[in-house]
Amino acid sequence: MATTETQSIHKQLLQEFTELINDGTVSQVQEKLQQLHPAEIAHLIESLPQDSRESIRELIAPEIEGEVLIHLQDEIRARLISEMDESKLVEVAQTLDNDDLVDILVDFPDEVIPQVLDAMDEQRRQRVEAAMAYPEDTAGGLMNTDTITVRTDISLDVVLRYLRRLGAIPESTDSLFVVDREGTYLGAISLTQLLISDPNQKVQDLLSKDIEAIDAFTSEKDVAALFTRRDLISAPVVTSEGRLLGRITIDDVVDVIREDADHSLMSMAGLSEEDDMFAPVITSSRRRTVWLGINLLTALLASWVIGHFEDTIEKLVALAVLMPIVASMGGIAGSQTLTIVIRGIAVGKISGGNALRLLNKETLVGMLNGVIWALIVAGIAVLWFQDYQLGAIIGAAMLINLVVAAAAGATIPIILQKLHIDPALAGGVVLTTVTDVVGFLAFLGLAATFIV
Image 1 (cartoon, rainbow, N blue to C red):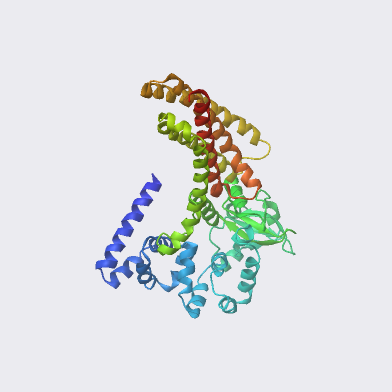
Image 2 (cartoon, one colour; image 1 turned 120 degrees about the vertical axis):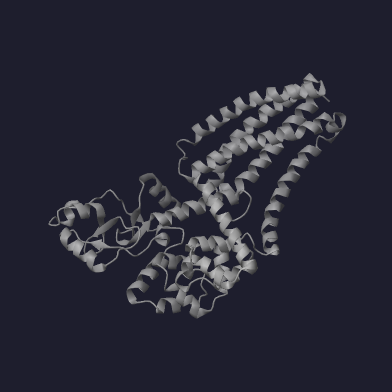
């Protein structure tokens, strides 16, 4: 329901801005933009053709321009950054939080990055450089270095006075991290406990070790899984020696989960979640051509199999009519299993310990569905062509292909993962090849043996 409402809001917003850009004044467009959150402005820019984007970007308030860039798809953000002058980029960088700045700096021209760092105070520069030392898809690349730390030997009253003196705390702060004199992470103390406990108590009296530290080189997918399992709002990030580096917050993890979902969906079509919907025609065509070429090769393989039974098909035209049914049903059955297994891999539910059990289960599901649909399709073939032998042949082929499809759908993603190939990207192509070849081979092979 919430997703439907959000889509409706975005659709209405896009319609309003399209009309304003075409018929309204600059002041009207600017006034409307001021009412939007940076993420909404980013969504709007992504939804507009390229010739309309520049007119919108020029009207964005300077203080939120950096946040808008952060929420944009990588390809669009990189293009907009390339069109901005150096002084503007330095200015935009100063408005961003450290974690967002680290994410966006990779798109900045090499000559601008030193200027951005030089414009910072020493403490902030050290924090940003520390975060930049880690790959983007790790906990270190995801973390924010803005943290509040306390020692074990001070009283809660001292902590409260310290917080009041700060005047503000970083967003999504639900706990203060406790460290020793060397900066080693010891545990955390929740803000709730801090507020309701006796001010004369020491920090060590409320120290909790429930929030385990995350190693800086942990992959972002593992971080997202950890947050999901433990319902975390924030978590500390440490070096291999246990020294506190920063923290990861739930808003960063939500972005990772969304990007992973987009990746799984787009990869099945050979596309990237960062592809610009309004990219130039040549650019979009070039990207899709590669995937179409790969699919052509698999289609040629299936056609090659059919070609071996050319004489058989000529003698019984009904085979050509019924062939697509076997391949199509196998493709659908295999895709169902493939989707379940890819999702299981993505959320960490499949390992060497349960992979065989899953394969057995999916094979049995394929066998049961194969029997059911084999009987149904066989009955249809008999009624259609008045040929009981043909009905038996297509029924047997259907059973074979659905069993093979289920087994292939379960094993292909696991094998691809072991080969370090993205199952979401290559799984569908491999599965389609298997179900087409097996389906045609089973149906035409049985027909050549028992009918023609």
